[in-house]
Image 1 (cartoon, one colour):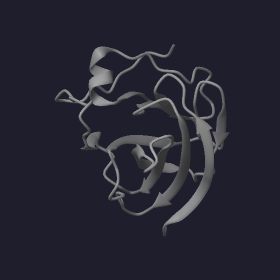
Image 2 (cartoon, rainbow, N blue to C red):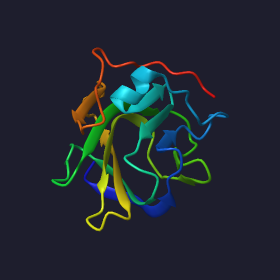
Image 3 (cartoon, one colour):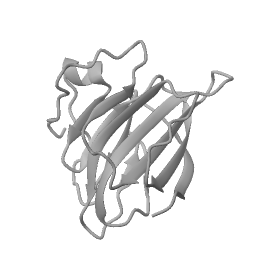
Image 4 (cartoon, rainbow, N blue to C red):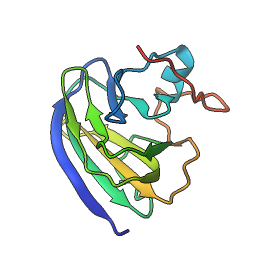
Length: 159
């Protein structure tokens, strides 16, 4: 599978989080413990909440690719496993809205890249569903706010 842009849109981030979840989930929000905050994400099967740097408008891109391509201006990057197992499209969401994204069935490494725009009044985010990529959870780029535990916490409760 070659690199392909599947969605591009904007959202306003509230509560310092953006979510990717299986469209079949009835509860899209995860609880956050102190350990989740320190690692920058809260994960459960079919649902992951990523911590953002601020609460601002955010430009969002969703890609499918065979490899991870980190942006040079990335402040935070995190990889987690994500399975698209049903014929319902995954969703990207914030507290007030959600968008479906057309991702084929399969097992992926989901990579979240994030940073501020140069002007400082907006943020950007790139989600890449890496086909056949290493799905092991990892903080790939750690900003000053992250102090990830070892091992990373891979359980969260829905809220």
